[in-house]
Length: 100
Ligand SMILES: [Zn+2]
Image (cartoon, rainbow, N blue to C red; front, side, top):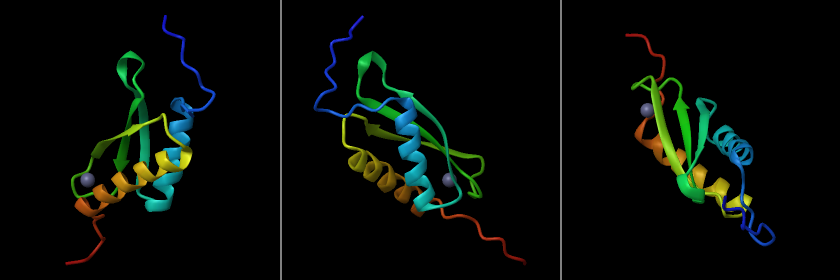
């Protein structure tokens, strides 16, 4: 067991925190973004992967993952998620329902 982490000075978010922050970031970007899951890195790493579904993407089902570090402030973590979500949305613009 490696339980020698000091949480005094460094926010280290758990899966629930990261999910909540990612959902907030996603909601601000687009209503078509869904946080599908959060996976902690192996070996006590601070790296976290966030699985995201983009509804209405022309490549549906569209799932992609973001990588962030959870030993950051909530603002920094949210910014990192937002930036990567934005980048994906640029590459995968939602399909508009058009006739013809
Ligand atoms: Zn897509």
